[in-house]
Length: 193
Image (cartoon, rainbow, N blue to C red):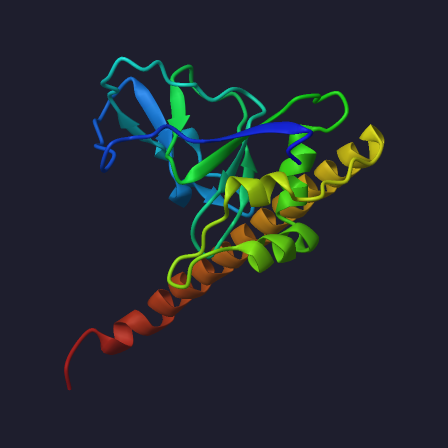
């Protein structure tokens, strides 16, 4: 992958990242990533930046990859606010030739079993696993024709939409049953014998 993309760690915050409500800078952290993508932008922490170093702001179509922890997920960044960075526990992957390798396809591929097995094999640490940049750069990435890449992305998005719809149906059914129980059983338990 190192031949196809530039890979760097996120912004090097000193110590913890202080939340500043209404701050000018948004920060994507490991907790904002999942196998299914990023949490909504409204959930990202806001802060203020201090220091002279100009951050390398995240761009549309950057791919974030969790460098530490039990879940080494990748997620595509789409249209981030102007001043957005990520924590130093994430790698920022910027595809050099997006006309050959779609960033969304790269993020999808990084989350699939073949590359996940490779990453687990080379992960370091006994308490908390971490992936070195050289390991990530050494991952073998396939570049199928663009139409196949687009098809894989469409199928992934369709599967996520189906899962969300099914989860909404399950939640709705549980609410219906709770309301039925309340209606049928509430009067029976309203007074003590």
